[in-house]
Image (tube, rainbow over all chains, first blue to last red; front, side, top):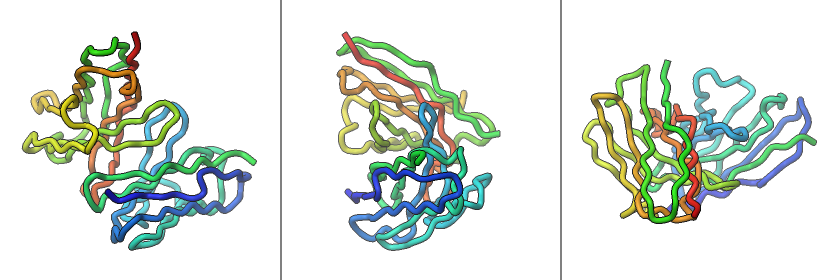
Length: 107
Length: 119
């Protein structure tokens, strides 16, 4: 199975900050990398698919980059509604696997 | 609009069975595969497997074989997850999620169904 490792596991930030979360795959996954946002008690929401494509309706402050084994999710200017947990997911091979999550908290 | 609506929370005793439903609307059900994802309390997301809504063929991740069954009723655009011989460690929120054509990402999710297994 492909292991997905996110860093950091948590971070504290303020509204307006630029936030970067990284995700590393244990082997190359091309661009088969997706990012999700989850708030407490809610289902995950797709933000970015295929490493860098913005899902319809997602604000442009979210962006993704990378290919191969190293990927990044960037929030250019953190908004109050962005405090949540973020997960990366590889869909290059079965089983699909998720990173352990990164919790973005209020500083 | 696309919606996946799951059945409500369930409380079961160890050894019992449970079935979770996931009713799709707003799109052609048989066009997109359906994933199932588990989230144990306070934990991350775990992919359980997927089912082809075109053929009905299921694929299970390791750890979800034997007691877990994915099925469909295409006449009512509904996917099902059945879990038998429940164990306390099956306590979790279970999500269905539509698999988009874009690199297999899950673009729409059900609201989740909490299954609690306790004596």
